[in-house]
Image 1 (cartoon, helix red, strand yellow):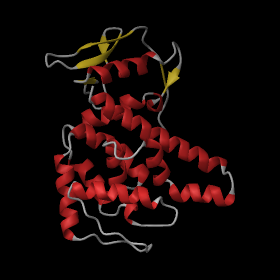
Image 2 (cartoon, helix red, strand yellow):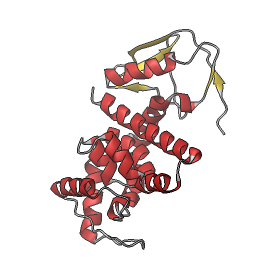
Image 3 (spheres, helix red, strand yellow):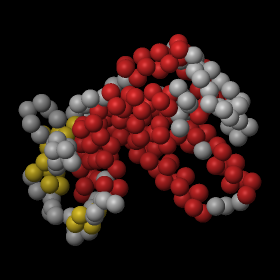
Image 4 (spheres, helix red, strand yellow):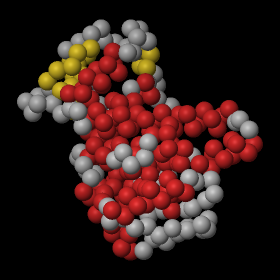
Length: 232
């Protein structure tokens, strides 16, 4: 369990950090340091100011944890894990990519939406095998190689975004389609949690399950916001 810390700064500003044009969050004039020692600084002015606002929202004298600084947490992963060596992130995403929940068709899914995503994926050179069975699906070698090539071409910001979304959604294709604007946020999260929604419809409201879905959807939205801000 992460120990909460008490706000120790009075003023939050955003300004240049270093000589490379990046902007960072400054607490009483000092740059924020991430857990491994890197400075919290990015090339996107939009993201830098959003990060500053996130730190500014911590009330004076209040205690906080990384859960209160969601953009900082994602940006920290981007800076300290992905930029130095993206190999581990690519490996995790590859595992989900070749065992993608989207490829296990069920009556709970929106078939038309799945077909739209698959048609778009095919345009990107991604042609996964599909099944209606519940047993593990072995993807052909050409698809595995296509997933590897797709991941290798991704920019680090997209890898950081998918690093949050993919484990939650159990899919590589679905969050990638969301980021690219092929599906709406509401459609994407409903499809990702189709079985859970079917369960709620069949058995009635489950407060704990509904809370879990709300938290997952918030994490997906935070990751999407990070990516969009990085483009600004």
